[in-house]
Image 1 (cartoon, rainbow, N blue to C red):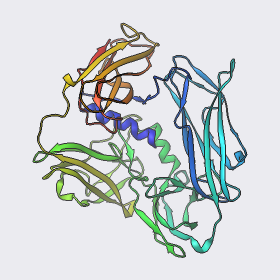
Image 2: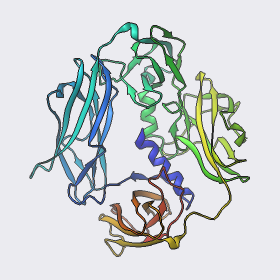
Image 3: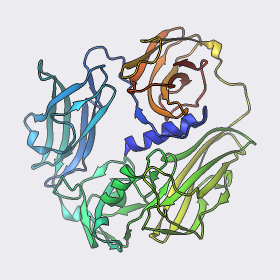
Amino acid sequence: MTRRFLSVLIAIVFTLSMMLCGTGTVLADENLDTPNAPIVVSEEQHDFGLQDIGRSSGPYMFTIRNISSQPVKISSIEFSGEHSSDFVKVNDYISKGTIEPGQYREFFVAFSPTSEGRKTADIIITYDETDPKTVTISLSGTGIPIIPEERGTIKGVIKNQYGEDYNGTLLLYDAETGKRIGISSDPKIGGLIAEGEYTIENILPGRYKLYYESPYIKYIYQVYIPNIWYNDANSFESATEIEVIAGNVTEGIDFTVPVPLLLTGIKDQNFGKVEVGSSKEIFIRIGSLEGAPNYIDSVTLAGPDKDQFSIINDTITGQELGITGQQPGIPPTEKGLTIAFTPTSPGKKTAEIQIIHNNRVNWPVIIVLEGTGVDSEPSKYDMRQYGVLPEFNMDSLQSGKMLNAEVNVTNFTNAQEAVLVIVALYDEDNRMVNVSYISKEIGAGLTEKLRAGFKLPDDTKNHKVRVFVWDGRSITETNMQALSDVFELK
């Protein structure tokens, strides 16, 4: 899921500094300055934590990214080590495949211990058939016995009114950590295929989030509906928490299939910093899949700071949302909510929108709102406090070539600051079609070199590349404060 909403995040951020109307491929290359290996992995080690013996954990995604200027052939992805049989490759979209420059591929691994105790193994990724080299990811996890009297049970009903195509999977997550909990012995399922009554037994006590995922609906999201516009509201972020108590049964967690309410924007609708006494508005587009309409019963504000937020326009309550005759890639009618954040005092403010609709009558769809009230004061940053010198590896855009932007940033302030360099490609209609970024902490008085880039398309006529230098540690952690002018290459 992380990859899907990141593309949304980047599009939202860029709309604040320029007019955008298209979709793009996100390449968040924080490792482009690695000089040696042509590939990097999303993490070098992963601990699956505690897992019931005989059950499989939820599949965990690893990514392999090509940070070189040449295609890289992946020869194999194999397990090695004493406990390698306790780890399972669930889905593999890259073995014996090729990763193009600037692109990435993913594979999924689950932990399925066969005995008690700590288990360790390595993933060995072999690449470059002519001169084989390897990258290693260390895995670990602990198998624990199931003691029924120390566990709890969840029961409910799945109602499917749209046919077998919409059959799906129940997914259980730890409410605090977001870690997916395995509830099936089959790692290829990773959950409980459900229709009718269901029972999930032997769950450790704690707070969880449970939701129903239809692979068909997920496929539609990914293929026919541009992710740049939509994010699934019926997911971990929005699911209501449930509590599992040892020796008890948590009942009445019911689902109607499908639950296809969609919302635009990012996981949390973050207003950022807003001066006390002023106001900022955002529009949240709400829609539904064709053939699976949702009637919106109510929309309400809740939470500790709900008085700091207001619904100033609501075009969905009392409406049946459905996309009639939607073509792939075409957004639906603009219906949704306009929300205003008007802080009355400094500090972080949070609230949530609760949406009740006919396909989800027991739980509201939750949209988290967040903003920070700030006193009016001069900007913390001054462009004169930073020295920024960009260099490109070409004098003008060259179709089909790898573009690298190297930016030397000098911090003239008296404190260590996080600096974010964003490199974005725009087509002839000024739509952002590719983006890459890198962030580094730069000490007071020091200079750091930040490099980001991507492979240019085969046709770059009337295209342009822009380089932005902002504050922040990542796209999701920035105030969008410019530390220099925008640099452009055509």
